Amino acid sequence: MTPLFISVLLAAMCLECRAQKDNVLQAKGEETAAAGGTVTLDCLYNSSSTAPSLFWYKQDGNNSPKFILSRVSGDDGNTAAEFKERFSSTLDSSIRSVPLKIQKLQLSDSAVYYCALQPTVTGNTKTLYKNLWSKDNRILHNIH
Image (cartoon, rainbow, N blue to C red):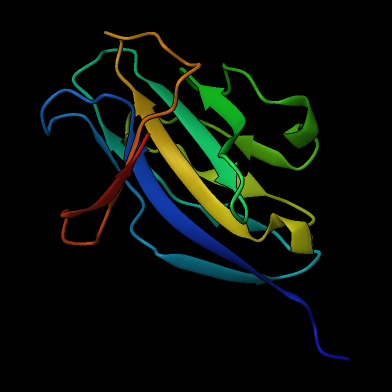
């Protein structure tokens, strides 16, 4: 029997970031893992804020991105009810990292996952603005 593979595309975004000091980086463009397994999606960030808020979103097909979780420090933050059982993240400010761990992978986990940084100047978590970046940091396109 051929194992099912889960394909995850990664994209980084920043919510109304200030200059180029505030950004997120998802170095790997794609992750592939077997159904039932575990995958960790890396996200590094730079922020001029002393208490940055980091977010993860999932977008499948032509649907709008769905909020997965937010972290403000360590495990502190919110996780959407539908993701609580299998999705987790810990913000490590010492290495500026907020990886997303997905356990018990399912075919429905195949999607684009966005790591997002919200600067403290807006506080707007309702509207999602994102910039998709190529590996050489050129904007590929903006979506509002």
